[in-house]
Image 1 (tube, one colour):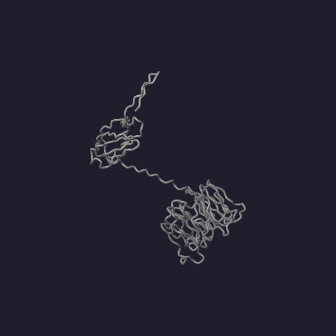
Image 2 (cartoon, helix red, strand yellow):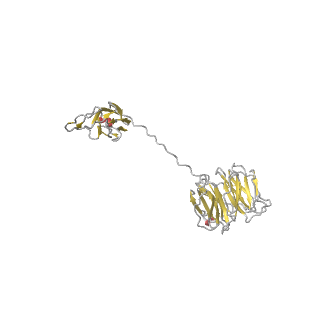
Image 3 (cartoon, one colour):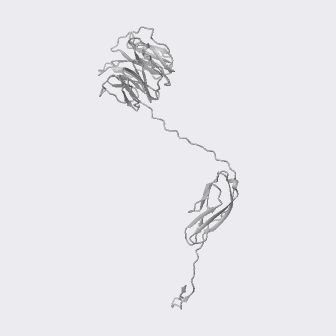
Length: 379
């Protein structure tokens, strides 16, 4: 090293020494790591940081840590969860080292005692999936089993059949049954099959005209045009009209809200109640512009409506919501469905007429199908 003195006015004679080596300063811990005690399963986190006087970056290491605990080599943070069984190796003599550039590693030691602990109680939070959307709408079916849907009800398939007479929805709106005149039932979606009518037991000219499901969907009734009730699954028999001579054929049927009874209605307007179904009146023996084609009980369980093919509605202990009687129709009405707080009518050309607090969801009226609609189902 060469040194030149200077007093502010003139330089002195230079002095030269031998070689001088500048030693790298070691880092200094910012805190004293004292002894500590923890239990198994304890979550720990504490700093073991050091500062290098020369400003060099510091690298950290550690030996003797309890299982489950590590040191961040870049920050010096000691953290982790003390492992189960770690008390068996206690106490732990821990050495933390700090190294900067070429300086020797600087150690800091402490004793870590681990005692047995209790595992934390596990709480599993299960998030329920969102409920499926509420179904609202209706299906129509033609005589060849082709299904048309409106609203947010799903299309679940067509019935490979001819002579279809009815379609019946499941309570959840995610399925339906289709039946033909021979009593063969096709199930779709959440609907389940429970059997078919035996065609050999139907009299000449007797057909299955309609069906209705039990409240829980685990059975159904098939009704013939001669008023016979056939039971499947958990459907119970409450009586029928098979021993009577009818003025007009049975054209529609429906279960009561409880599922402990059912109604049948004839084309002449005669109403027949079985089980807990109550009789509130009929159009039997009264003049009609067109034959009766449907019956729907009011949603409150009291009263019902009848509809004729001309769209005329007859209310019995149920509020009158409106009708198409006296209004020219392109094609006759062929069915009546409960819909919201009222009802809707369906015509054979797919026309829909809603008398309810639920919205109109569409129709085929402006684009009639190639084959006439024979029935419909709504949710």
